[in-house]
Length: 137
Image (tube, rainbow, N blue to C red; front, side):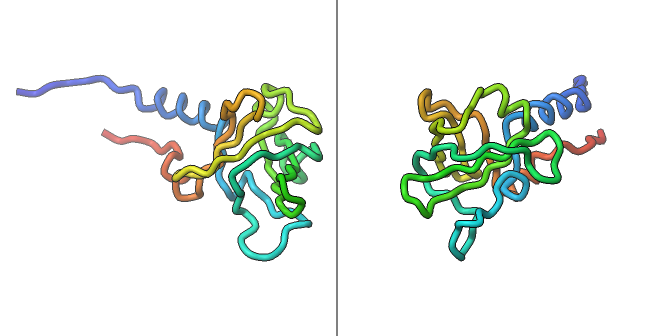
């Protein structure tokens, strides 16, 4: 007995790719070192609240917005690059408060006022696993 099923892999991959590109990015693409950071792994982010201290276009990357975030302690600074549509949808401004929460798959960023995540910075290994690939049957 044989069963048949129809899967539109192209449409599933396209939908997944579109959804993830607006709401997630990899550590390599989304986090940069800050000029005020001190040694060690500068892509680590402590859980907690951060205030947006600067908003600018991401240098060399059209369609992306760079947020510089200041943690509760002066040495906690995070530079987060977001896709422009994600940034625009959140209507964030200088002085607004955000939070960061480490997860097994990466770091969740969200608005502090609603505590709703809007951007996931996925560990590079996780991000690579989610990349769309052609499916052959």
